[in-house]
Every structure is written in structure tokens, then in C-alpha cells.
Amino acid sequence: MTKSDLIDRLASKVGNFSRKDIEVIVETVFGSMADSLARGEKVEIRGFGSFKVKQREGRNGRNPKSGESIYIEPKKVPFFKAGKELKERVDK
Image 1 (tube, one colour):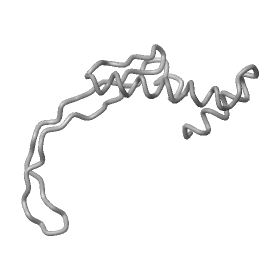
Image 2 (image 1 turned 45 degrees about the vertical axis):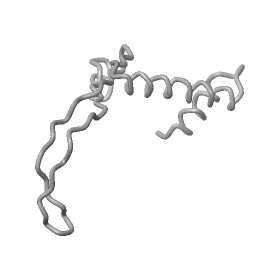
Image 3 (image 1 turned 135 degrees about the horizontal axis):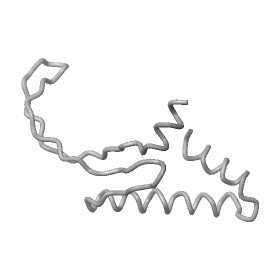
């Protein structure tokens, strides 16, 4: 499902909002989640899952084109952990 599909599905279920209004709402929710993660905060949606930022350590890697050994800098990456209800629903 894409963001556009989500907006279309919400628009069909909620009759008193325009598609443009729903698009603004979805953008606001996702933007707020991204801002929270950028600040290092955890985002938890009960019944769905949680997002947090994990720190990856620096490591030695290899340039696939030249085969040259390179150092990969430490970095922060977003991480999603599915909630119990979502896991059960997907497993059915």
C-alpha cells in the first residue's frame, strides 16, 4: 500500500472530509512521526508497532566496484518493531 492508496482508502471511508483534507492529515501525521524520530524520540502506535532510532557502529566494508577496503562511518537508522496485535493479524 502506498501513501496515495492510504489516502484513497481513508477518503472512501470518511465521507465528511475531502481528499485534500485527508492528504494534509496523513502528511501531518507522517511528518510528526519523522520529526520525532529525527529528535531521537520513540514513536509508539498501540496495536501496530513502534519506531525508534538505532545507532549503527562504524565498520570496515568493501567498495563492490573496485574491491577497495573502506571505512563505513557510524550512523543512525530508523527501526520498526511490530506490535503483538499486528503480528497476530498478519500470521492468520
